[in-house]
Image (cartoon, one colour):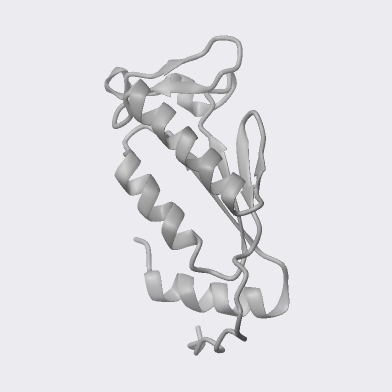
Length: 134
């Protein structure tokens, strides 16, 4: 199971010694636009870069063998997910537009399959996070 405190502690350790990026995927079966948006906003609270990838159904990946209830609908040429369990086509397009707007307003990068966001800028020195020993 996911341990939020452990994640925060490890992120604090890593961002203190190295350049770090969080990577998330938009459009995974079983996820939802609401859950994705929460993950996006949560990732932006950390002092690191964020890379968001559009879910793709690669021919040799396990997702091509997903159960029928995942209802995968993807473009046969680009392999981008168009809709699936938890994501309507409209929701997928809406989140792509949200990411485009976020990237444009935050000097991010927009690619065919991804969005890149630099670490959030802070006008003040961020407080050191307390790091627990693991």
